[in-house]
Image 1 (tube, rainbow, N blue to C red):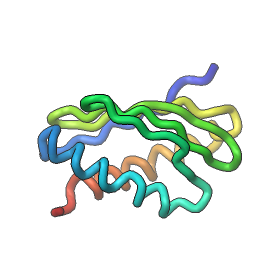
Image 2 (cartoon, rainbow, N blue to C red):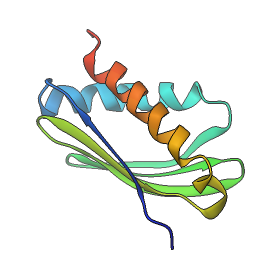
Image 3 (cartoon, one colour):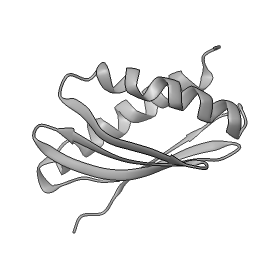
Length: 103
């Protein structure tokens, strides 16, 4: 089994505002990536568990929203491991934009 892809994004919004922005912005962010679709998304308190599909492959993980950072952990199947570095950079940039711009 492969090691999970982990991305940590700092913010200064507090947990509630960060969660509000993420809940509103995740679908929009996924729709901007043509090869990515969200199969499942479930929130339990400050944790979102999800399953996404990309290039016919399924990846699952969770996202934890804390007062000063958001931590995403996703396990990628073998085929998607080749794109892990690119995915990590894209997630980091999108997350920072979502968590730093004024809303």
